[in-house]
Length: 123
Image (tube, rainbow, N blue to C red):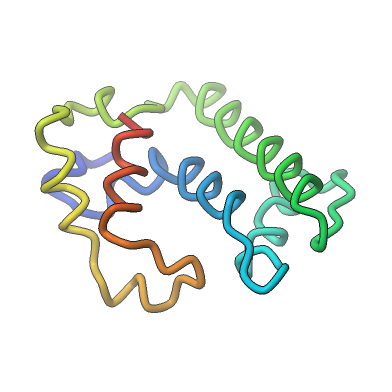
């Protein structure tokens, strides 16, 4: 894995679960953020997810986050940004290095504050 400060994409696996958790908590017009149910379903294929139920989506996302973390641990991969040498004082700068062009394709549309929240959670 590359160091996230030298390669801005190197932190994706370390922030994935936290991004998915942010999606868990956001519903738009009574529906989860597009892609949330599908991603949870891939990681937890036996889950029965009612996309109209915030509780059902939350339970599926929580199970998906746990499954992803278990995969990281099984591979002996780092699970926290600090595990790859990121310092807490670098989190704000790291969150600003996220490519805004890539965010245009994300239905979540995370704000700068959201990105920093994700980085702090992944620390």
